[in-house]
Image (spheres, rainbow, N blue to C red):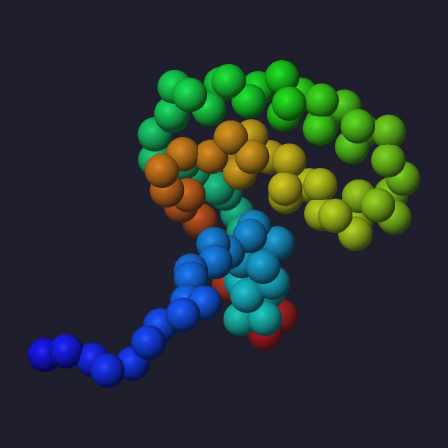
Length: 95
């Protein structure tokens, strides 16, 4: 079976942690824990950059912390990652 459609400008965009968190919040879920499946050896090449980002974020105002969601984006599990991130979520009691 062959399709006659042209797929130009077609690409997959990975979801960011802030977007995933927004999707969870809309559905009444809260992230309890983030687990990575395995450690990649080459990810430690980026460790100095990760420490620099964390240092720069430390000196930012609370307004910037909330805007850029440093509490989520600079977690070791997220910024160093792995092949797969596993999210443990909990349904919010209020909804």
